[in-house]
Image (cartoon, rainbow, N blue to C red; front, side, top):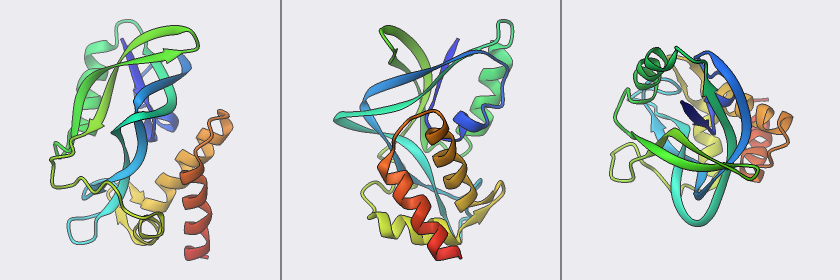
Length: 173
């Protein structure tokens, strides 16, 4: 069983990993397009979390994780509890490429018809929200900074996350 991580799964998979590879999902982009009312914000003051948002011609580089053999059922249950808390994500099978090897991964993508979807927010608006929001798993800014740092450590460029990381640091200094 393979799982595609593009946000917090990169730095906190939460399941036993047997192997990981840099991988690319085509037709999707990583975006702060989901209002977080549980983990990184509240219903009164939503934060933002990353999601895969469909975008023809785009791609998202992330990490494909192979779940340790024997841990598939437990991993699936834990991922569903974590990712499907508000039904804004859709669980799907996603073809990705790890180098020249195709992999069929489990992935969580945004439902653009869900009330928490907020695609198209300007980067400055995203930064203002992220700088202020806090939820059950802590400050929204920590989620951003952890994701941006781990992408950089892996050599995965994401100019929007780099800009947001710098801007949120300015706003919270």
